[in-house]
Image 1 (cartoon, rainbow, N blue to C red):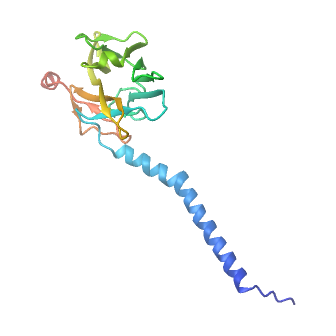
Image 2: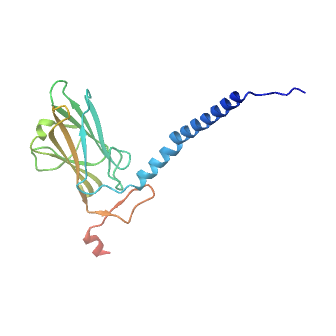
Image 3: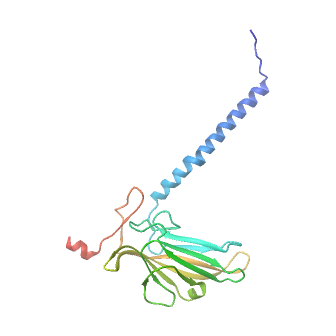
Length: 212
């Protein structure tokens, strides 16, 4: 019979390696499974955006293009509203190489009414559109994302506004930023209609409620 004698230092080393391996496994499990699940749960539990809420779009460093989407729950600006599509409206910003000038290309994945800068009327987007940052100085562009259309008119929609503003960054440079603001939820938001996915229904017009 052979009796194996394991040195104390080797026993400690094996124990430490086993502990580190266990910690690594826990970290991998947390990163691949637990953390994404917690993030998804937190996102679904998040409240819908209120009228007046906004998001800023700022180019960082040598960035030349930036894509920003408005949609239901998988877009950059989450409306969390029923029948609003993912990438319902996509804004692609392209910066001039040397100047603080931008071109914004617009494309739609759903029914969108567009009000161009220096215009009062909203018109249905028929295809790709584009505006420039110069047009947004002193004015705004408007977007009406329709969830329901009746007789050619949007009866349920979320309305956004795009503005451009100058600001001074940390190194004293004058830069431009864009602000996307949720202006209106029409007719309203039904706060009691939240689904398991965190999607809300539009409210009803008072005339509809009176008829029922």
